[in-house]
Length: 178
Length: 108
Image (cartoon, rainbow over all chains, first blue to last red; front, side, top):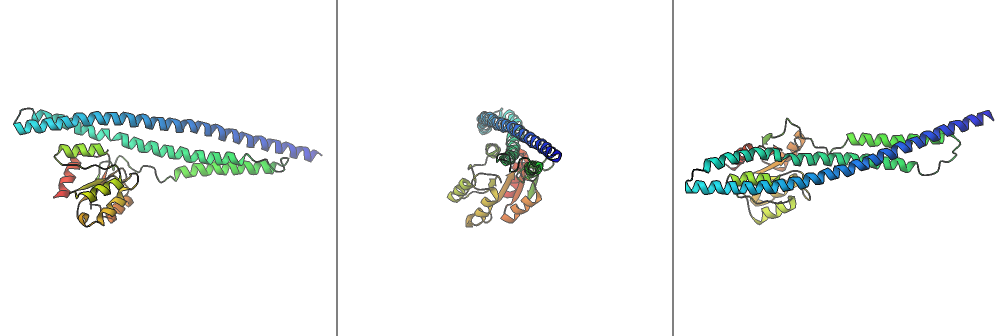
């Protein structure tokens, strides 16, 4: 009788632990859903801003190039001045490329978050079917272990993601001619 | 990025034909022969390495310089580029002056 009560108490504790794990996985999944949304929003804002910036830049740059050519052909004095403006635009070109790299970084983060969410959802699906023999602590422990394994697998696959941008500051701008 | 490259080349007097991805790039390259191809690696529909291989199979593009301009900087990717028949590998972000130097060099 006493042993039964103890076994029942252990099962209750194990059930609470499994419930706690479900709460943690659910909360984390909800937070990651918000992160996914925010990353997508950041990417949209970045895209809109860079499109506008690029259109304006290209419009200005094309006019400067045309004006410089016109001046050079007519032997005008402003050709040198236009050349200086072009130098400034060239410098801007290097920095305007940042949006492309930032976009790729956001893509990599979205992929990571998406993979983690998939595993959290998989872990939560393990918590759905009723536990057979709920009075036995082992059953709850098995369930918790399966959920934890799933979450750990999610964390591991994040680190193994091959699509992360490999570019670094040392290789940026490097040239290899074969 | 494509617009940046086009601006730099056009400002230096080159005529530029742009394409949105590898498939469109291959279509445009077969419609008219160009003196130089600059392509990204990561593109929708067809990546840069596939484009390089496809172009090298065309008679008109056996010896046309093809540059890959990409964020990818690993040695293995560069080796794949070389094996595919690329002429050079440039890592983004590019410096306009360097790009023009490389273009002049490979066009000689």
